[in-house]
Length: 451
Image 1 (cartoon, rainbow, N blue to C red):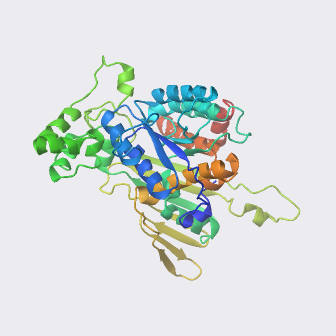
Image 2 (cartoon, rainbow, N blue to C red):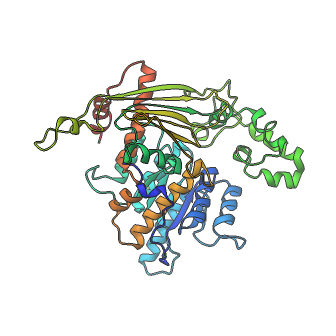
Image 3 (cartoon, rainbow, N blue to C red):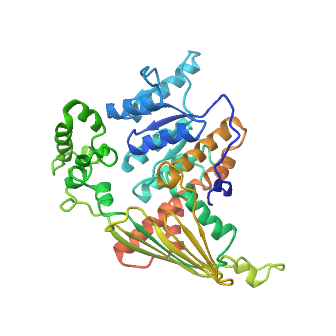
């Protein structure tokens, strides 16, 4: 299921209740700050607490979005998610005894390292909170299924207990919402036949995402006066370093951080518990695929025969088709996605700014320029945040049930999120084992039988 059509224009929920959604940020890195900013600027929600082990990052986010210059109060800052968990359990026990305690939170943004998501979400599940997890949900299929069981122990057939969202921000960008509307709602291309999509990651962006090259951070950024991303990811307090020790002192601190590395005798928990930006991009043990081509094919899948629907109608929108995805790291372009969609009535060409629709019948081409709002991912950060907080608000203040809010605002279920991740694991299995994977059989064996 896709995000609701009304997202083609900025969503204006029926806000106005004094009981605004209260939110906790777990992980005060770049993504935690991005969602905190979006909550403040695009929703009626309020950030009331932050959990982050790095003191500077925790205090920086708290000062910007929670306590200002007054300093933190009880229940507003935690040195990590485990400290928050202990506090919340005790807070609820105190409330049951009739003590006067601060209000709790309604929802959580999980913005930690990917490998930490499983442990955190499973631990939060008994608290019965709404959750938004940064992508990916987890790094293995087993972990994804463990998360699903913790959140929906009765299985996929039962309605969800709380709203759950995943950080697939591009689903909620104005560009992709319009693209879907043209293809699915308006059916300008008729029946789809083929899709080709290219994801150019960017040569140094890919390097930064896993390990580092010192030249990227110092010579191409810090020495050019750029202290934002990606320098601030390595040294969150880089601007304070410049104020205190000057440019040379800041460069020295950057080099210290980029010199941090792990070795054969480093404990596994320490290795897995933090990013290591001192790993050489060319000599590290990183085995992430940097040039991947995925081909997906569908056979005809008509609806079941009925007396009042002819064969052609039963096959509308369900005919055979092919889709290809090319992810390539070695590009000048950075995340400037592009592609083509071919149908029986027309063709669409798109990049990150423009959508061109060619009509076979008229021979005319129409160019669309989707709205480019501020914020990250072409407005996707604010779009996702708005939908997530709106879903919480609908449940908390407007009497909507959780399943209705999930469908109306998030636009997909937890099972569909698991399905999208499973497709990636199946594609990787096909690449690694050099074989064609039958999706229906793969899903039955690896997912359905395990649940």
